[in-house]
Amino acid sequence: MLEELLDACGPGWSDHLAPEASGPLAFIADSRSFVFGAYIDNEPVGWVWGAHMWRPDGRRMSYVHEIDVVEAHRRKGVGSSLVEAAVGLARRNGSHRLWLITGVDNDSAHAFYDANGATRLSDAGEIGYTWRL
Image (cartoon, rainbow, N blue to C red; front, top):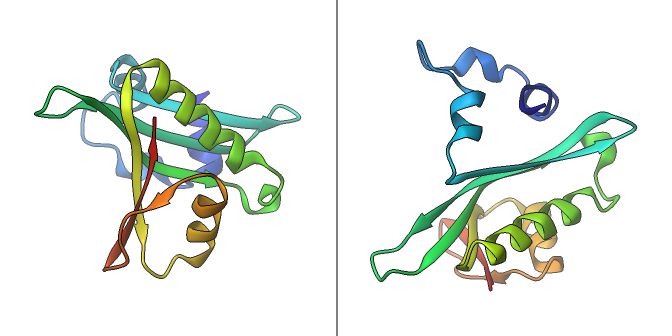
């Protein structure tokens, strides 16, 4: 299923596999990794993936590396459902924060995160967003 999501949301992903890497299998085998997929009529239309990590102060936080929804299915609640799933998982895993970074010029992402309960952290270079859990 992860390969289906990769093909739908990240065409050409297999071209970037490290030599002799187990790719998707290693990712899902690592308990620090997470991925949620969105399907409509059994077709993959979106995903969110990231990782949980420990901070030096002993608290846990979760990071979203990528969220993407296939163009034809945007603005239908798919992305919001994916964010909700990631926030819920971060809470269940004891994270005190879920965060991500996006480009300063990515206006559609800014509007999306603002509308989905995130707090904007900065306006310089890259923009971070966080959900306090």
